[in-house]
Image (cartoon, rainbow over all chains, first blue to last red; front, side, top):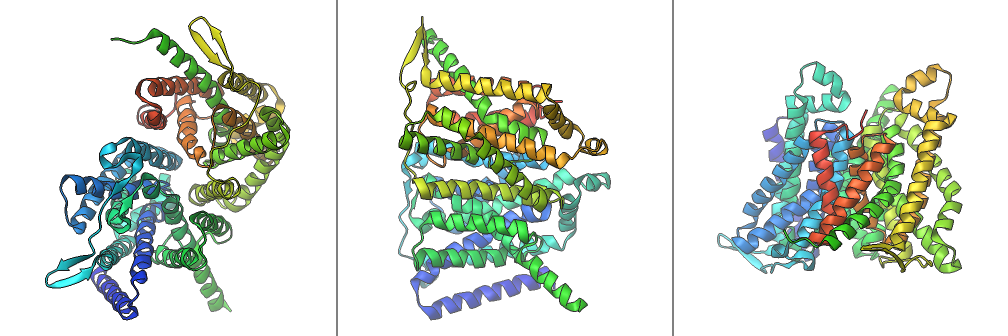
Length: 320
Length: 291
């Protein structure tokens, strides 16, 4: 199956989801669905660098917040439609991803991880000190009730939901295409043995930079519509714990070597978290705690995630 | 330029005191990351855990936080040894430490932090001791005891560690593991056992560092994250595995941070460590006294 076919299928599945949501006629579905899809994008974007290249990015929240805050900035300077804001977010986060990668990727893998961890703290410091985008008080963005697309009047949350759905389809298609391309094979050589890859003439630095830039850009795109979604953006919510931990936990739990792993992980964990917050009203704290514990358990007992477990099970069945 | 000398000298003094404390915070990572090559990003979370233990015993039984932390050393050592054992069996043995090992420590960081939030809440907590409050005056210089005492304790701990690593048999064995694990194995020594001891030691330092932290400033569970950047910046700037380098880097960062917060405002100080880290990684990745 080639990329175009896959994109078509992804698009079709997206349409089905949308039709289903319409048939349900529950506004909450769009609210919850947006968050879950946002995590799908974050997890898949994280996996492009983390799963394919083996470089851990702890700063997902930083890239996400960069996207969100570039939207706030643009909103004050020159309001643009949300799809354009997503592109702005992608450019800003992509540039920061590239810069971080350029400074730290020439060294051992751990340095990159540490630098991304510190990046979140520093960007939050910058935002808190920058009054133009609201500083520590946060920024209000009034969300319109509806938006006109052509002659159609669409609920704004539904509009954001559709945008996120399209973005998720794009990111998944990109991830899958990378996985089966020469680029993906290059990434896999870096993950498995960087020294050997370098010795065989794989341009490792260039490949790693492509991965960080791409991964950062997608995370920025996921963050760009966020201020419109919640209406009031605070540094502590944009740089929230849940983005950093979920975007690592979801691919790890689903399986990091294929595009379907982050998708499964984000759908499972995302839905579970929506459920626990909405129905048994667990606080964010307990949610994050549960995700953290699941993450630890999975990296210890199921190193290849759910996808790995299923593959192992299939292999065993074939043997017997 | 119009600088108040008074302010400048006091800022530098405060920075040196802060630097001594940073040395204690970094000592553990200097062992785990610098010598054992274990990227323990959960170290600051263990420090905060130490702070809360000191807080708990101080508030409920009125015991001095530093004494609590010294009594708690064996417990922290055991915790560290346990964490290393899990880490070794699950990741190091299978050669998966780079991706999954990091995720493991990241998970530990979150679980510890959120666990503390659930138990103690997000309010700032502080301890009470006789030396919190008064200051010594030496001419222009003001030495607040709440900074001086942690600095002295931190330097004592740091000196003890340095002596241990360079002068004792076990300490030298740890250095040997950090240099060539295979060679050590050929000498019929068990590198895993030595690494377990060393990692236990590195977590044990978190107990004391935690008590010092809560003496210096009121804390809440997420304060630890501010220290991740600092700790690794100091460790990298000093040169991985070099204890003297770590000490110099700690003082340097303390002074620069203190100057920044005196002249530009304290909300900027977290950015200083990050700047240090990036500059070091970009220009001299081996650090000041790196091998």
